[in-house]
Amino acid sequence: MEPLPDLNTLSLTEIARLLEQKRLPPVDKWNPDHCGDSEMRIARDGTWYHQGSPIGREAMVRLFSSILRREADGSFVLVTPVEKLDIVVDDAPFVAVEVKNEGEGRDRALAFRLNTGDLVAAGPDNALIVRETADGPHPYLHVRAGLEALIGRSVYYELMNMALDEGGDRVGLWSNGAFFPLDGAA
Image (cartoon, rainbow, N blue to C red; front, side, top):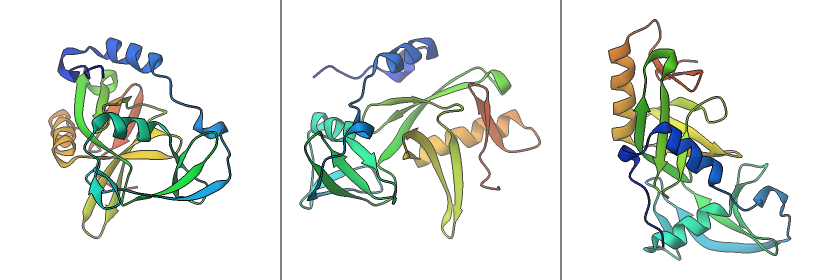
């Protein structure tokens, strides 16, 4: 298994190149009959479980995450050309565990590493959103096709510090030409 690149050593140009090279299976084009339950669950902290036990092999988690799809009814499935299996997702299927920042203000670009090793650049196609709930703000990053990453607490604090240091009329950050409020207000 190829080691994951260190986010701190990559420029955003290099991250963009890696994102262009990443080819995911065309799960949106696969429509097999539903085959049952995968007996898998993704916990809020991003840990993947099978039959109640954590999946310890990172390569397996990465493989499963590449065939994960969100259905029109909001449920999640693992899908291949020949089968479709339900999977329980406690909150979001991914967790953003690291952020790379280049620039500031309108010229800022942010890229995130997910718990699966995937890289996502925040921008018009991958929005940051904060949902206010009874237990406080829950920040998310759009990953792909209705799949989101919960932004880890330390990463969210890092983003908030950037936004507060920058000032402005609204607490938020620009990334790749799009502004994202971080205060949870609509």
